Image (tube, rainbow over all chains, first blue to last red; front, top):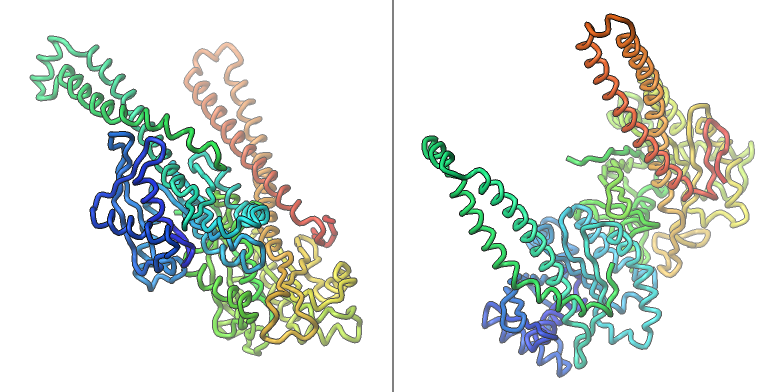
Length: 292
Length: 338
């Protein structure tokens, strides 16, 4: 999760956790650490009453789990930063840590303050560090990852929604078009509100998980296909003669290879199976958002 | 290791001409994206340049001129998220042009070496010198005050050196900064003045873009602090677009030449193969025939690759030159754009 100071990252993570912990559609999110669960829920409760948390003064990592009904589908780490780290030079250890983490992330959520979308020359300059960071990171990324542009504080621009949308189009348009031009980056733009009446707070995390499940499912499906072919080859080559020759050479027999590969295939099938239904259930949740 | 080529750019201009301010504005503009193109830098360079731009936008403080060192910047020019070109940019210390350091100075020797390596040279001219039309009476004074004679001499030396080394001369951008100082009616009629002041840029073999730019409308005598509300950048992204367009144009031209040579080679190979295959003795030349056929197939594949690269570079050059419509572009002294 990447954004400048005061964009609302800490507020968002608490609100998102509480909403998904309560459940959204058939999905829930649970924390891997009870202390995080209590802290995030308490913070979300305060936000609901209109008391917003202080900005983060350090990097926080939340180990979280996605559950679909009673199945634990996916474990993931959510990273929150002190906003200032994004605009600090390499002399800052936190800036260096952030840059390293950004490079290794499996999903990137860029937070944009919606009130900055009301067009001025300054808005462009204020959003520029996030856009420049996104471009630098994404231009070096070659794997399939989700990219979410979260427009925070959308409730504050509700009365000027058209203007804010036009600003988003103008200021973020080049970045959106650039992501659209790739095959491997799966983008979504999601306006969110926290505070007393949360809106869309579940969707950024679910979009990332949706893509994450898709990527993992694709890899597992490819593995399974490969194992199937390998088993066929091994079965064709196995027999009494192979048993004698392979034993004589001290190599595993084709029969043993077929058996081991079957085990691997079953293991991947076991991992793939619980992803199928959640993936199907997640898909319709994003019909109302703009994907790119 | 980056798998894209690099463009070496050197900006020359006297102290206060606006080289550094232009660079900062150009980076701020292009790093947020412009017409599908982005300029990207490492995070520290990004912060360094952006901080100066933010200071201008927040407090109206114009960036201080670079008086200390020649500063080198490395950028990546991207089409969407695809890197097209590395850009090696040298912001040359402005004061150095005005100092009579002599050819023995390391500064001058270093600059000459740098210019020899440059694919694109920016000659930066303060728009304040062009408020009134250039006349015989004012020409020499402007050339002296703007260090144009020195720039001309350095450029000529670099062009001669590159021609001698059988490399194409650098493309040239005559960057007119602070265009807001020039009366609006004159802004589209600056070319005659520029050809009078910098005739070398309109010689045979050179490609030159005349590009007026401005950061905003700051009035006749702007101070070090301006009103941020007057900031309205204009044309800042076009000079780098031109550098890239010209690079792609030269690339497509060079590959076309190679492709023509390859065509001749293919024709010779075909002829040789035909000769080997003809006649009663062909049966006894089977080994040679197979070898010649393989060589011909490989040569044809190479030519196909060249043609594909040439087309991609030419298409890219056309698209980029389209962005420059409205600006005066000269090839061999003849205007080819607008």
